[in-house]
Image 1 (cartoon, rainbow, N blue to C red):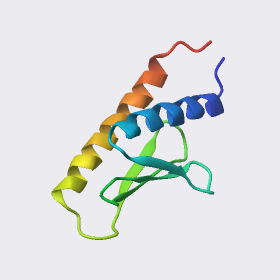
Image 2: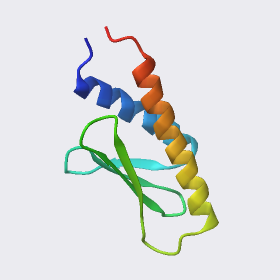
Image 3: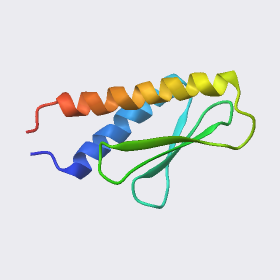
Image 4: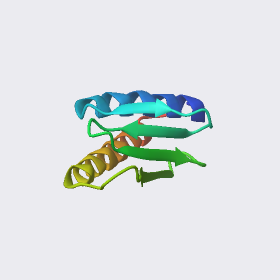
Length: 93
């Protein structure tokens, strides 16, 4: 049976792969289950959860929110949703 930590590790690895497609970086913060996603345009998004897979995802205002920011936000939300669905659909062995 898969443990929560194994699911989270799978999620992290899959999300990193997806974010690389958009040249984004996933940075794990010191606080447990807190991450920072940085786009090539230097936009910063924060991702966290108390109970995986209920993920909180917000934009960290560090400058002017541009049209490009919205495009990255949609893409990252899509990647997160895909990764969670992919992990949940896998048989628990």
